[in-house]
Image 1 (cartoon, helix red, strand yellow):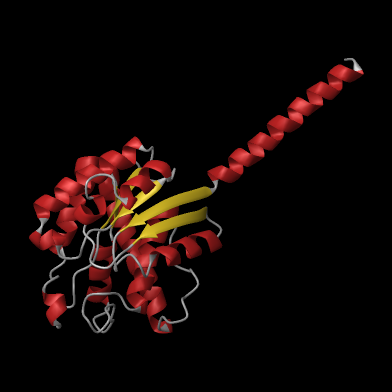
Image 2: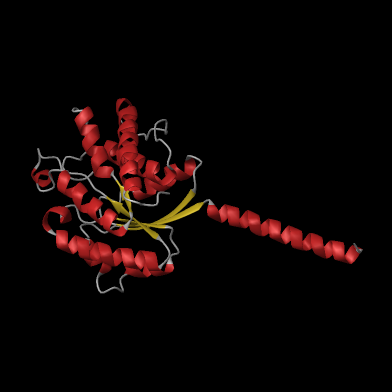
Length: 255
């Protein structure tokens, strides 16, 4: 091979090698949009940080979490900030969390706007994740309005099955953790929002879903009671394994 031809060949080879490295780097990124309210606000960045630091994919996340927002308000006339972000953001996943009482009082609206979001998400080349939230603490007035867990789980799981979408079983993990550890406290004093342990359990559920790995052994968060760390990790992993089988049986494509 002539010197000129060899040099040209090497340039092409190096260019292809560089492109391959860039492609592999990009493949390791996980871009996620979170659409929800005050139940999502305390956890989305935590999930991003822990998944990234654990050696998994590098998570790049954005979130829209105004307090009390329902899917109907997030979607609006179909030209809201949430919809525009879905269309232009090139996300891999869009996490959908509806207002905490929607499963009890607004099932038809929840179903309608869940479907509208799924259509937009898939049209943009992304995949939806339905974030199944937790029941309230029935010992409080606010918690009584969000109790029990069954209708919440049923509402989100029905949407996941109908749309062949991923299901994040946060609520079922809370239910298991509280059943196996009766003295455990996961809510703030308002009986609705998560305390440090509740946020950590939610993190562990999303970690398992996004990575396929057990959260057992993850570093504890500073504010979480040391004695609660392992039980929370185990509850998240056991719940993930149970719902992973259900998702597989329903024909859902897992990460």
